[in-house]
Image (cartoon, rainbow, N blue to C red):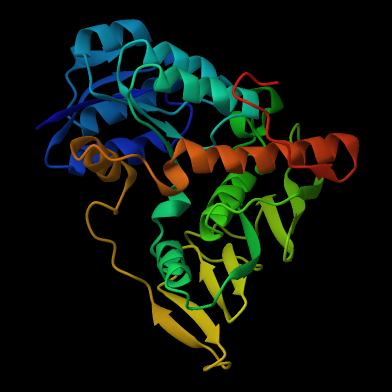
Length: 349
């Protein structure tokens, strides 16, 4: 079976990566592109049209026209965070599967709007967290599942980048910018995945902004679990970008278990494992990812073809848990107190 895919909204630069995965898939084709803010994105959308051989007649500035004329199977959405719920609701009306670029949403109530919109159609929703496809983190999850370090008791996470352009939406609070919404979503969602879904009871978060910034550039979250405390740190303004040179602290995760530890750093070629049998630790080469678990497009198409649910960090269930932690962290910042990780129902009550 062949799969027709459209790319909608170019707010997030990861749209090119996702469309590249479509282009690489032997049974998928980019059949249309759309951005309603063409004044901003003309260069980006034209570059994508050229790169993925999309007919200029299939490049649109109306979402509804794009979906009606191309009739895709899958829509890839990359809007600014505060617009996620609105865009998913618009697109879901056209009966398509949805791949939404991270973070999930601005708030839990918006995340639930997204889930309801796609569930009503019977289609699949995947929230793409690029860190979920990094071989070191995939390898760490395998080792955790195999019991290499026993039961997970702590997660310590630090991640970010050297900073996007100051005039981008990443530095606009009204658009959902800031380090916490983006990078805490990563840490909370993958951290919950490592813990097999276990949630903290409460979080305490503090954030920092420079005088020039409209958003938080740094945040530190302490999460209380039944076995102790875990930490999640986010940063816009790391010394270097981790995809070029790992900054210090290194970006990634340290997982502590009852019988060992694993350090899992972004882009690393090995993970370091300590166990009771080898307390000095050893480097383990990262797994080579194999189909259908090499990228989000390949994975989502596999799930559709084999009638399987979206699982792991990309699933609405796991991403919703991450969103609950993010919501609690934001409330903690606002109230300057420790807050309970509440779970409101789908109506937002």
